[in-house]
Image 1: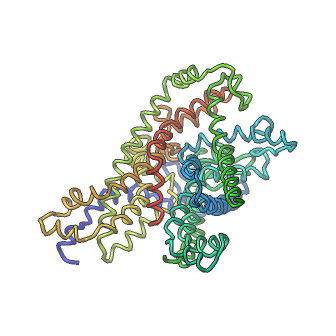
Image 2: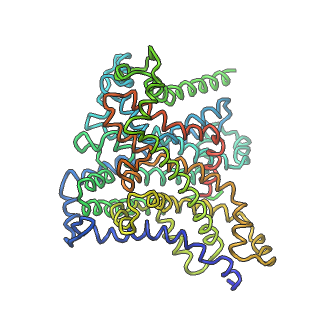
Length: 288
Length: 276
């Protein structure tokens, strides 16, 4: 690179971003490795080695978060991919209500998470909630969606899917619309039907959309907190506690070292799952 | 004929499903915001016998010494300032990161992209903010929002900047433009589509953000609209009507934005998603 260009694309341009990003994001990330090994009051700390991590792995109220976090991320991600793809295909086909349906599907993405959480908590009330009164009308006695330890996590995941499906769908719409017409024409000449169209063209060629949805939904699921917390606060018992909500609980209780250890664990958990996943997906991507 | 019929019934079913799945929860919030406390406590879908919407709105606004008004001011300030800063910071960084290629660039990219995956370390961030005397301040929260939205913003700008030919830069430099002038006079005006995307998506995200204000902006004086709603959950536990009125009020700004920018939001995300 010549001197002129070095001066034109000067690194000074990175300075404002670098200052904010380094101080507010990178620095705390590195510091968390140290503070996770301390007993910490924000003013003062004493080094205690791996005790916080031991506590985390030994106490069942804490390590139940791993399983829940993984289940939650996997379930929300899977449903967002499947429904997002189906809706994407449907909303790019020749239908007359396309614009209306696209707007409606996308709308929940814009509504406040807390508001969604509160509204669905009421709708899921075991005896008076709209969901169960409707089921009762058909003679089905619905479960206690948020109070039953076996299904509470899935109930919250369902609300998350309801809210996030619009985003996945939009990504799929973009992916499907970028497939060149020629492929469909070739299929028509070969006499393929709509199943062939879906299986042999849309599915493989919207691969990059699928990868985006998987990565975004999975990472989002692993880090999720804002819909879970107002709906259940980790309960009943610890049935819906995920790592992020455990971090918040420990923070609230003043166990800053333990909360930070939880952060480091979440960091490692996300990295171990997300980096290989994104590597694997990108390697298999097809270029149009 | 049969094909048409099938297509029609499929479409009809889809519209019907959209009403049940997406309109019913909204309708539910709306009718209950119109009821009195007793009516709302029934959790029913029924249309209210008398309309209390206006008195509910007044009560919600006046409660806790006009906290909701303060929260609206806070949320609006937070959103506007965060976005202004985010646009400038991301566009400048994206410009240099897209145009330069030397030994440092892969490292810079790595650290920035890692921000998309890594969860922020919360308590250490509080500690850093506290040391800078920015904890529990608006500026502190703005910096947090900008830092966390920065990786995605840069991704969008870099993708878009790749489509702006370098010949434009060359012509400007030949004409005697330096780096800053080239960027602010020539490149930045070309970035309008990305700016629009970021403005619309981030304003919704930041206005609706709950987690960051919860951690970094605590205290009843500070509250953003999302926090007021969260706090009302315990306060209005027997007054669902006020809770729903609050939901209605804080959903209005994103709703208005949605109505005006509906096409743009989807188009913007579409543009970003393909490149990302």
